[in-house]
Length: 278
Image (cartoon, rainbow, N blue to C red; front, side):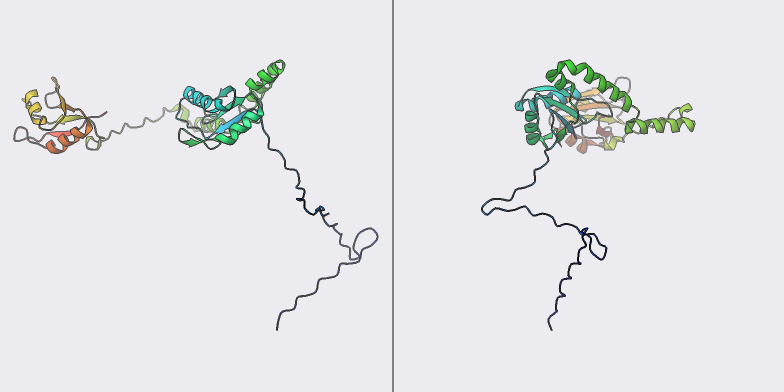
């Protein structure tokens, strides 16, 4: 037997004040927007995105020096219009960020649209509009108001100096260390761990150890010249059991090292050959 759908419930009768007799309020239906045949329905006006003459850029490569970074940003954005100023700092709060100011909002809009996500120094830039006007914009658009603008900015900077989360965290750690008496003790010196010679990266210069005391430069030249691209052999007058052998490239030095390591130059003692430390 097929299922039978329940009939719709009748709407409760209304009282004169627009309230159903069962006491429940009645919600007026949403008025429909009339649609004229052959025309598209009228859409609600969209809210325009906030825009300004200055772009706020994040996710910049922190390893790039500030003068180089500013010059790169100026060179990148100048094709869209006049760049009034580029602001970037290397301090903890501003690291990896910058502000680029243009002469007009339209230029800034176009630059944001086309450059957002561009990988500058291998990191895609995150770009948005700055919420406050920059000094360069105010100085160009309203020079008479520049001093008041700068004073407000300095006051805001002072007011937020001690509320910066990074500085607050650092200050709390320092206070905790002082309460624990940590400030009275010198910081523990980290031990200088040196990589063993056997694991040093390739180098075109080889370091020879455990040489016979009577070894000569000519003997070492004859031994290592069996392998191509030998450049120089250097003995240490004050320490006769070590020497340096230099090749023209790392590949040639590697071949000689692998072939002659533990070679018995005097028939008894094995010479130790490693890459020299860079």
